[in-house]
Amino acid sequence: MSEEKPKCVLAYSGGLDTSVILTWLSEKGFSVIAFCADVGQHHEDFEAIKAKAVACGALKCVVTDLRSEFVSGYVFESIKCNAVYESRYLLGTSIARPCIAKEMVRIAREEGATYLAHGATGKGNDQVRFEMCAQALMPEAQMIAPWRDAEFIESFKGRKDLLAYCTKHGIPVDAKPKANYSIDENLYHTSYESGMLEDAMCPPDDSMFKMTVSPKDAPDASETVEIDFKAGVPVKILNRNDGTVKTDPLELFLYCNEIAGRHGVGRIDIVENRFVGIKSRGVYETPGGTLLREAHLDIEGICVDREVKRISEYLSSEFARLCYYGFWFAPEMDLVRHSIDYSQREVEGKVVIELYKGNITIKGRESPLSLYHADLASMDIEGGGEAFDYNPADAQGFIRINSVRLKTYAALRAKVDKE
Image 1: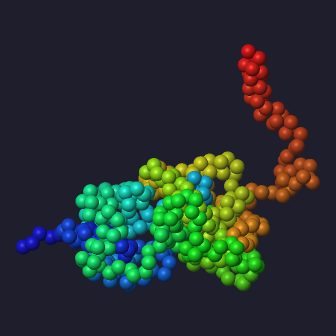
Image 2 (image 1 turned 135 degrees about the vertical axis):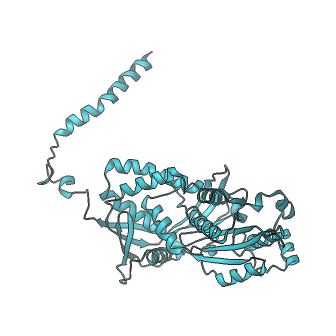
Image 3 (image 1 turned 45 degrees about the horizontal axis):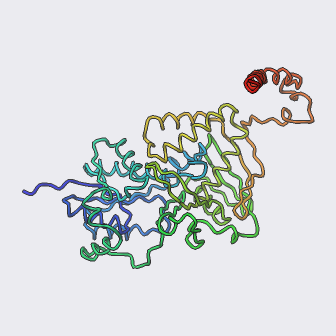
């Protein structure tokens, strides 16, 4: 009786690299279960991917629609804390990886697989993200990363070797010319890097963008939307121009992508710091995420206490760092997310936004839980109005007390400078 082959779940895209890896793993004696996550890739033919995986030697190919979970459990979590890495990157790839890894682990347990494999390169962040998330959820799993395997690297030194292997093993190859850059896409964003974009002075070509039009080609007429939040999460969008309303989380987010994308919102071109220590140039388009983040920042302005806001800004930075580095399922991330949830309990209300040629303009906001009071803020009312006891004369002592340390420091500087 032949020994049963060990089972391995491979994160499979249907592309050149993972198709070669699938066949290579089969040759190495694994029974491979291909897993493809639907996180909103644009115009993906999942039936074709399943057929290709089986043709490459997979025992089966599992395709899971994770779009709703991705939006509610990851995208909106990021929006809720205004997450942005290094002040610019909205974490489109980063937040998809824990969602995918979680499902990959679920399939491995269901299938009795003890090995997990991926096609991430040895220079990027994704290898770290996939493996850190997987090991947090399935500590007993053994990871296989072919692009860190000496034998694999020796056999495949470039695209030419990969194509030759495909020819030898009858692996179908996409006949379309390969773009001179790599693409990662999901419903939150599309990213472009490598190839011609490794030259930091080479501008991205307008033709490569999938989710947004160039602001120069956006409509000459603006559109105005209302976005409602509850507990920091978007719950409704209304287009004032045509009356469109969306409340389902997935539909709401996809509509944000649609309307922001057609007005050229959400493109950036940056150089960022990877966790592995390498600087990387990336071009990103995140239309819906950019729109919702701006709206959320604004509603927080009237709902969140000043000191809570100060602390939550630090937590937002930590959320972004932990997410980018692959620590989504770490205890410190649990602490950050629970703290953010607490800060968002009373973030509720409506923001009115105008979209026009790449610009997001806030036109107004209101909240039933607002900390903003017009009488208290008014320059035309001497006190705080009927509801608040505020005496401007009290500011004199407030300023005097707060300036004591400044006067003390000035005296020290005068003494030191004289010496």
